[in-house]
Image (cartoon, rainbow, N blue to C red; front, side, top):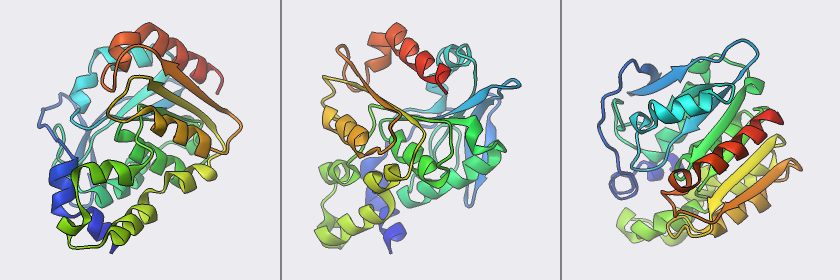
Length: 251
């Protein structure tokens, strides 16, 4: 029931903003009834791989080539994960199925948990936290402008009555699959939370929640004074790279 409700067509239509953008040389990952058009620059011997889940309204192609090259220059392999219906992927964005796709993405990488650094931006935090929950021995988790309170973000666009359920039923469905407090409770690896103070879409409270919910002693919250929700990198790229470099070097 929970998965079926999260896959409701109204959630797909109101919450996700897919764009069809072809990708040169994708790595396709089979996920049941969808093929995800991802991109992979494998790590060199001894390097970890950063698995990147982008934000809503973005596609993998937006991060090529400049971002992927800059991250690779930090000494990691780069895997840019795509979503159903986004970029060159088939299927449609159904939240419950997208959470399940995390397992297929992990298997496609063919790497041990300890070799991975998982990164989620904005809505990508849902899938990054899911991966950290399923594979808690990953080397590191980075949440940039990440959504922590998923129910709050859904309720901005959808009334439970439009789904044919009560507020309590929607809350229960979200809690069953998207309880970030519970998922972060058992994660003991390193955590880096990045957020701008002026984010008026995914407000700074989400960053505080992620940081406070994490029980790992190896956690850091970095605030940026410039840029809003979609401007953290554009307005702070040198400082951003320094923060990420320091995090990766500590793994």
